[in-house]
Image (cartoon, rainbow, N blue to C red; front, side, top):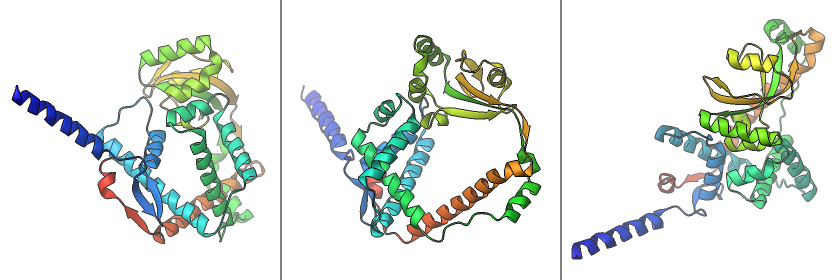
Length: 308
């Protein structure tokens, strides 16, 4: 009898110890220029990036954890630089920014997204404020990348003729899952409520586009034949039956198609200029962020991080 009681109390102590050792959400896993990155910040970001409908092994989870922490540290370095430069967001700018971000989600998807990420609207509002601060910091920083010259645009066109023959393209909304049973349940719900496509996509789809607007834009001949045929022969506006491919089980809603076209220099010029400027901007942003990180004071709570 005594031995059983000892075992019981040992179990209680072990459980209590496990609970007390669990990280608190307000604990800091890192500090960047004295700005804390909390366990809650980490968990929110991790849940957002974690693939849906997929189990993660130890290696994948560790890689995602490192990516999340790296992104949070970079974000904190940018935000503290915004504070140092006294950059702020007005209430009017915040309202406009929130409206723009909500529109990107599509009707009926915004609230569902908050539920999935386990954050309330005030936390989401703060995330938008931080995003706008970063945009404003980048816009105010010098030197800015310069637009390409007419000669650079012309040289790019001559060097890349394959880019200016555009194959036929199809645009569709996509839900893709890993098993037929889930796909059948989703298709059954869509028969009853076809307008719920975006909501179901956000809830179930494992495709990366599910975290944005759900749209895929695909050139003819790129996807497996089973998908390609439906995309380019199906009726626009229809929701397809379940399509099996090496990537999983797909349900598509075909939105639009464009025919094959050939672009001359005048037609391609603006797109080339935009592409070259985006490349320069991406390179500039990467160097700017690296500079901020080099000049930042960063401290990691490695003991706490190992428990995540």
